[in-house]
Length: 392
Image (cartoon, rainbow, N blue to C red; front, side, top):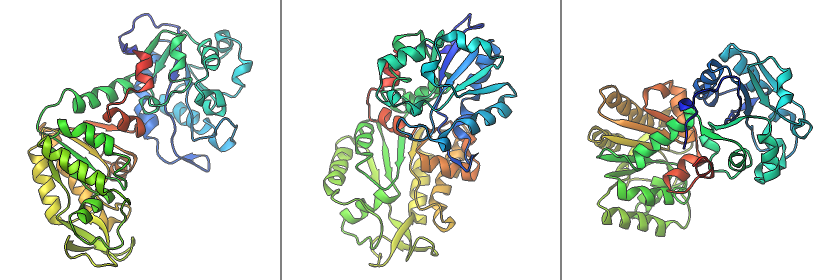
């Protein structure tokens, strides 16, 4: 895999740059610019190299139809301000653009093709569509790691027709995940949450042989609490998961990975209520488990203190209500504290976890925060990602 940052003689080349600018847009306004902010270094580097950048990206799931609300126009305007450069959105139908000479008429340093998923051929991984896209540029750069688990035309097929490179954000994602999966400094701990065990079972199974500790929090912890004979009241849980829980317990024992789940929890009668701390054997039929309790927090903090590498995917509780954000906040603060004294290498991923860190304005205090979602999890499962395979 070749990085564009190591390539010389880029001057005046047309760079087809695949980005993931799939940011939340409401009434034409971007509510979270994290994904845009992360790719600015790649864009600034390419501008310094006097290249002409042609951005390929998508927003939402238009499924091959033109949907005005999913236009990249707000993104082009945001980039114009942040780059302090001329940025133009190209709204012409891609099939009416005949070759790279079309882009000579524009003085702008950065051009953005309209939402690539307006074309059904993109998600069909159509090779003729990819070849036509490739005719617009001299070099292809993938800086959309978060889309690289998709076998789409602008991710996989296009690399067959142009010299292909990875971008800075792509390199950072792969390097951070390699530290978790290959270049591990032990002890290593994984804190994993979310509501469904089934969506993360393959990640857990793939990681357990590499881990010293796996800490189960969030909704999926309720399945473990119930499995060990406790009532969980009205708490969310995934149905028919006893076999999966038993498999995780068995595998963790076999691989000598310590499995931790809550000893005590914060409960309420509803999502908007006040919190009450309870031991896991005290849950009433009308209780909802919404966060981890102080005993569990202390246990997790002690483990973090004795950890060299940590992966965190999934908040500890229903953090949208501040009464149930304490567990996640305490975990975050402890990781940050140990980061500052260089005691730990931290990788954080998952939409809800990143949202929590954004709300607390502490994203920059971790070694690496991934916005990759599905690609992040599939990489941790040990799967081959089409976007990486294409660049190799």
